[in-house]
Length: 195
Image (cartoon, rainbow, N blue to C red):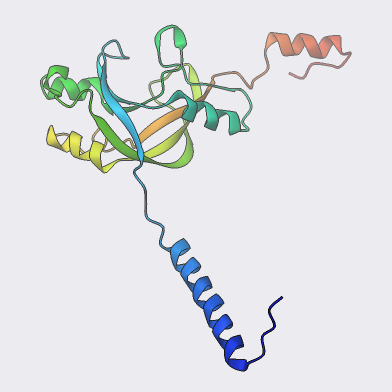
């Protein structure tokens, strides 16, 4: 055990801990966005309304967020053949591809692009008729924005109306509503089914 005997020693130790604490506060306050996540750009030939340019996303990322969610009636977003999960970031929509002369014009397919994840948001999806709600992670990627601008497109999809995003959950229409199975269960329990 060390015994401090002088006032100077006490001041030196206090100065050391004060400086260390200030450095920790500075380090915590100096947070800069990290674009450490990457995906590979690819062409989805048979997408909704035609071919799409997309960025691959690990399925584990989507499954992890989905597993942590506490929302009734949700399911993983179907996006692949046979409604399988195929996580992605939509980069260029079919109508945008047509406007620039087709998917063959995109020479960056197969290249990696970096992005970072933003907040989890929910929306009522337009154009996805069977779904009442969709949850997605916002995505920010200066590299994807630059790619779109290099082809004469807006920085963000659909003339800037949509953010880049990763869909992580959906809820089908009428999932939370009363249905025949629930009404039958209420009757069997001896309770009157509400109308």
